[in-house]
Amino acid sequence: MKFDVSIVQTRYASPLGPMVVAATANGLAGLWFEGQKHLPDTSDWPHQPGHPVLTQAVRQLDEYFAGQRTQFDLPLDLQGGTAFQQSVWAALLKIPPGQTTSYGRISQGIGKPAAVRAVGAAVGRNPVSVIVPCHRVLGTGGALTGYAGGLERKTALLRLEGALS
Image 1 (cartoon, one colour):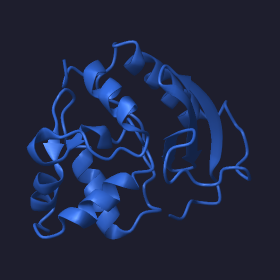
Image 2 (cartoon, helix red, strand yellow; image 1 turned 180 degrees about the vertical axis):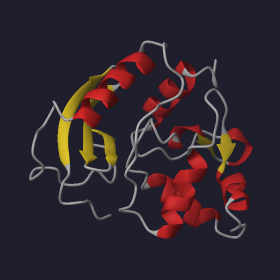
Image 3 (cartoon, rainbow, N blue to C red; image 1 turned 90 degrees about the horizontal axis):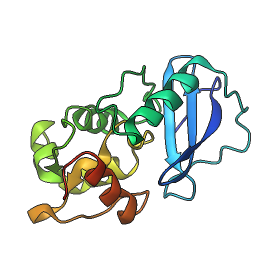
Image 4 (cartoon, rainbow, N blue to C red; image 1 turned 135 degrees about the horizontal axis):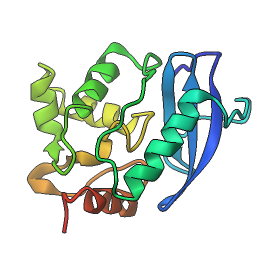
């Protein structure tokens, strides 16, 4: 994944563990749990906690984890992904809070019914965890499978949203 040279970052202490929050001049470009799969090397990204998009993202994350927000209203910069990845991430944004879908349904929805594995790979590479809700995608028969941030976090997010009891 390629990130714009204008990218900046801050840290966020979520109830599920520390997170890296990153933005460009175009919008939110990254939200990862520390140590999650596919976390890019952020060591050269300047820390700018006062950046307007980062400030807004942290505020909305606080509201989300407090159960006061179900939808995010942030500009997103997902241009670092391939066209296919971007189509999958756009499909993720359409999954309503409190609901789940499957990799197969996403592949059907983007017009690539045979691309279930590729959809799974794109979901796993989602650079904006939580806000682009890859945690709402389940395996066959509703199985809790594959979450780059770990299955415990996926379960916690789905419980917070009311998709799991």
